[in-house]
Image (tube, rainbow, N blue to C red):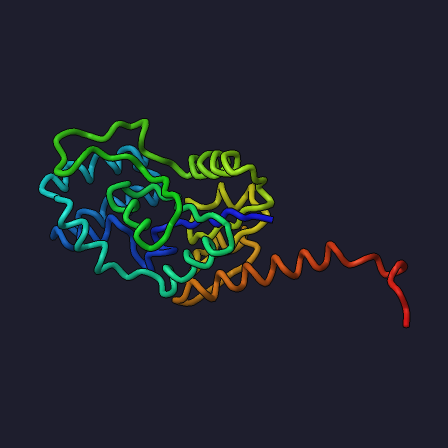
Length: 228
């Protein structure tokens, strides 16, 4: 049976931070970005408002700066190895994030097969982002369902890895989920929980659970087992 492995980026693959925070740190506007994230976190700002605000804030951002930030970001250990193992098994990996596509698309260099992210204008910014291209948490479910349909898979053939409230809509509809260094809200919705800094360990947990469940399904009822 083939599988689709879905990964959140901010706080999951990026340990303890977000793409926007790392870019803001490099651009010298981290306090301003922190204020925006606080507004978003308390519901005072939508993802579209947030996207428009960071475009105005990052008027001098260039692709070379994004490359530098991406290379120096605190990625979870074992990320390329997990992506290679997924591909070697004939399965697929998908990163779904509300962060900018100009940053998230670089995860293909680590082996991600597909990336779905908020669409931003070309750098350096000359215009505001199209609101229709900016993702919200519910869009993660839509993106995953579309990927499953393309590959002829069901939700039961999908494992999602995430860390926060934005992953909750996806965790609520998928049977196989792994909370990685997650907040209490998401841990309560996750099938498995992992605390640590190595994706290979979280991925291994998910693999073992799948094997155990398949064995349980194949095992005959107690009254039909052979006795020796």
